[in-house]
Amino acid sequence: MPGQTGSENRRRQIVRSTRWDEQEFAQLQAIATYSGCSEAEVLRRLVRRANKQIVISRELVRAVGQLGNNVNQIARRMNSNEQVRSDQLLEAYRDLLHAVKIAKS
Image 1 (cartoon, one colour):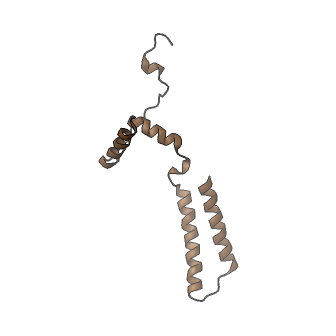
Image 2 (cartoon, rainbow, N blue to C red):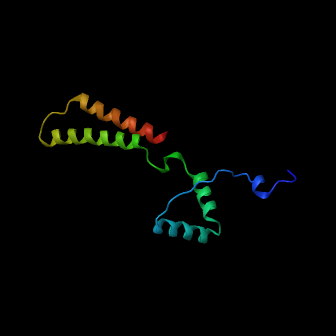
Image 3 (cartoon, rainbow, N blue to C red):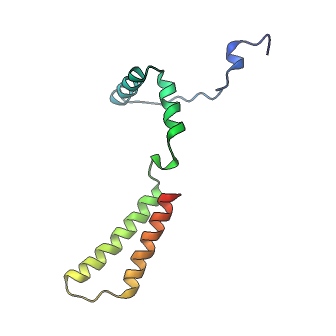
C-alpha cells in the first residue's frame, strides 16, 4: 500500500530469537555461504522441506523402548530354554505395530 514503509509491507512478520553454540552457528554459516543465501533463508528452506518427523517424538521413543523390552524378555526366555507364551509374542507384535503407526504419523 502506498505510504507504508518496507517493514510494514513484509510478508514475514514473525521474528524468533534462537541460541546457538559456536559449532552449531559455524555450521549454519557454512551452509549459508555454500548455498549463497542468508542464514534465515537456510532455516526457512529446511522447514519447508522437512516433515514433522525431523525430530523423533518422545512417544515414538517410548513405543520403541517398550518393544525392545518385550523382545528382550522373549529372547531371555528362549535363551534359557523356557517356553515363550503366545500372549508375549502377541504383545510384542502389537508394540511393533504401535511404533510403526507413530512413526508414520
